[in-house]
Length: 489
Length: 133
Image 1 (tube, each protein chain N blue to C red):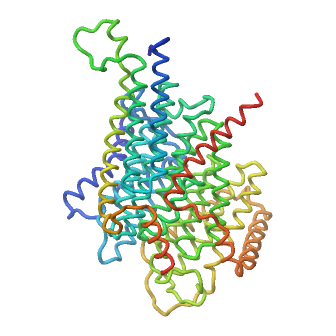
Image 2 (cartoon, chains in turn cyan, purple):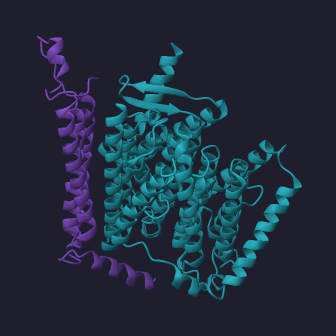
Image 3 (cartoon, one colour):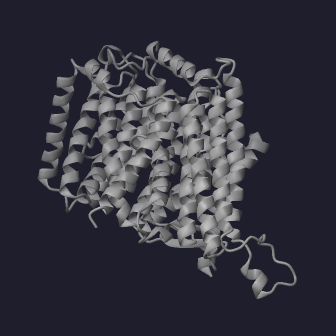
């Protein structure tokens, strides 16, 4: 009896944000509170699942219907979604004219669905919903530049989802089912490659996902925070779920993941604008997230909690150029989130990023661990550019509530992680972190003269034509790799 | 589920090939056309082909619409199309339509920047605006 009750509650919770969106569109007077309640409920479901440690599968509409799977993997992402959405809405309270809560409510509901579903078609619907909502959020002010950015986002995302749908159709022709579990044990072929390419594109991963930096850098800052922290994980979470179900996906996903980690870091090192640098760093961090289904959730949570305050603070800074960053003065309420957020992503102990990276390191083969360490050195070098002695400009703005909340969560996550990892923590780990930071600072010093040269050598693959070509290249490349592997047998 | 065999199967394979070729040509259209409107139309070709793919997958078990009537026999039930892909693709059609509508609205707004809707002109305005912060 309690089982059906909790199932009913789960479905109610999943649908509540959509209901809230309808209500706030019809009655704007009811304001922010229903959305805040939805965020809190989402956070509670995420925490409950993580602490409980077990999950359950819910099948709606019979065998061929919607499959929902609430498990710890979804828990990490739900927690992230709740925290970031709540913080962004709290931050917007300071602005005189704040955008209505309708679209964020739809986004919250769509993302929750993405993290929970375990069948191909529901995932398709949820991803398209998230894509359309993100598109509408980006073009909020309707300037030609934002229109163009939003257009190319939706065009790329819809092309990728069309290919994904072809993959789903081909898979149904073989297995007669749309469930994720139907992919188990099948020989890899065109259907799986199309599915993966679609998800790589949505998740901002190597080559087809390179729409990400420009979209995230040009969007309004509160939207960038949402996009970079949570929306991009809508493509990554299903990849982790698939990799956990079918181990033969793992080499393909890891190959793409480590490529985007390296490529993102290199591009971030040569970026000239802070928002572009942050966006490239998202590409690199998402590459790390997909490496391991076990640690991926924690890493995505740590990354999102840090990336959202970084983007929110970057949005309040007038001059976004990184050139001459140390000579300009900024308010403390901008400087503190930038420091704490970037230190966490770089893997500083006592912040959430450290524990997540430790979890990732424990779940990787040695060769990949070395590559991840190199990427970590790169991340330190990327963020070293904004670690300059702060000069306060005398303005004493209070820290916005949402940013403060995220920073507290980062610290709390770091302390909790330290408490949980206490037994595995050795002095050598701290030595390793010290080495990584020293190496990163060294790279930063060496690069400071040649940054412009590095930027010139970087390939530009971000135009619409290139992005469409990237989808084709990665799809064809994955097929070739599969063929090549089959040859010796 | 009973799947057709023999000559019917060969016809289905042929149709599947044609549909995949249509998807490919739509994708090539997106890649090669420089006009935004034609890009969106090419995307429509792709999505229509996907609809055809799902209808074809559903037709492997039979061609009759999967709507039950009062007097069904086991023989008539065996020739019914698979309802699942048909139901699924209905959702995809609706989503495709709304995405298409949104894209066309944005394109009509962008036409005030460049009436020729050439991709290059928007990318170029992007590049110059990045140089002047």
